[in-house]
Length: 456
Image (cartoon, rainbow, N blue to C red; front, side):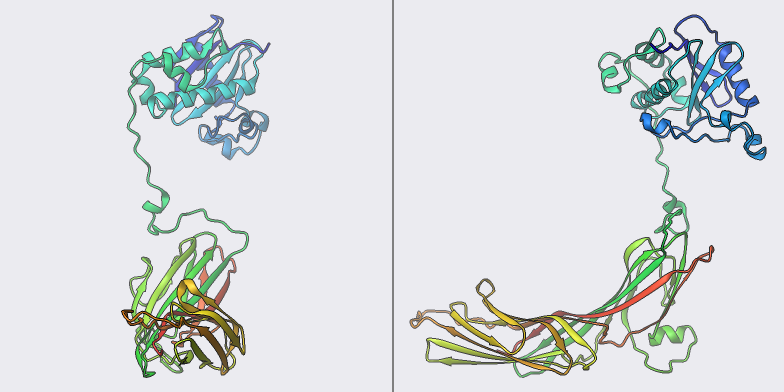
C-alpha cells in the first residue's frame, strides 16, 4: 500500500497558512514555513492547474513567477525546477499545486504515490469550486467551517476518500458563501480590434476573396425589361496568422477619386455600399476577422442586358394537345461559359404524357411545380439551343373553370470568372509585422437572382 499523507495545508500567495489539517500527528504547522523557504531557496515554482486527469499530470510545466531569479539564472537544477515534489533534509516530502492565489500542499513522512496525491489535490480544487464558485484566498476565509468538513470527509488518516462533489453534497449541507465571479471579458472585447482575437496561428497563410454578383431582371410579355439591378458582395475567407492588415483596391470611381487617383481606364459607380463593421469609409484597409465573412455589399441600378435570353412559343391543338417550343440564347462573350443553367417553363397543371426533345442538355416534366425543367450543364457564350415539348390535355374541361394563372419563365445560372458590373480587384495586399508572405486568391462569379421572363 502506498504511504499516507501526514497533513494538508492551504497557503496564501506569501506562504502563510490559511487552513491546515493534521491527519497523523507526525508533522507540525512549521512544515509549511519550511516548505515555502525551500521553495524559494531551490527556486521551485508551482504547477499550473489545468485538468484533473492523471494523464495531464505527466506533462505539467512549472512557472517561474514565484522566483524571478530562476528565469535569469537559466536552467540550473532543472530536475527540481520542473518538479511539483520537494524533499527536505528532515525526511518530509511536499507535494503541491497552485490555483489562483492559493497553494494546496501535502506533507508526508511516508513514501507516497506522487501522481495519486497530485490527482487528489486537483479533485480538491474541483470540490472547492463546486461549493464556493471559485477557489481563492477570500473564499477560503469566508468558509472555514465548510472547508474543515470537506477536509475531514475527503481524507481519512492520510488516505484519500470521497472526491466527488455530487456525493459530498449529499451529506455536507452546510451553507457556503459563494463568491460572485466577475466574468473576465475576452481579449476581443478589450482589444481595439473587437472582431479578431490575438494568438491566431496558421502554417499556411492564405486569403480567399470571392466577388459574387446576383442579377435580378424582369421582362414583360412584350420583351421589354421592366426591372433590372445587380446585387454584389465581396465574400472573404481568411486563414492568416497574427494581427494582419489587408489593403484592397477596386476600380470604384468614387473610391479612386477619394484616394486622389486618376480614373483612367474602366471605373464603375457602386451604389448603396455597405462595409463590414471595421470599415467606415470607402477606403478599404482593414484587419480581417478569422474565417469567413462578407467584407462589402453593393448594388448597381443599371440597365442590364439579359445574359440568357429565352423565347417561348405555345400552340394548342384543339383542346387535347399543347406544343411548346423554347429557344435559349446566351448573350455574353464567347470566352465565358455559363454553368448549371436551369430554365423552368410553366405548363398547364393538367398536362400529361410529356414528349420532350432538346438540342442540348436534358429536360423533364416536374408536375409538382407545374413546369418543364430544362437543364444545361455548360452553356458557352454566343450559343443558342432549342427544346420542344408536347403534352396531352384532358378533352373535357369544366365550364366553370377559372382562368389559368400564367407563371413566368424562371432562369438560374452561374457564370464563373465574369461580372456584369465590370468590378475588378486591382490589388489585395496582406501586411503583418512578422513579415510572412500570404497567398491571396481572387475569384469572380455571376449568378441569377430573381430572373423572370413573363413571355407566355
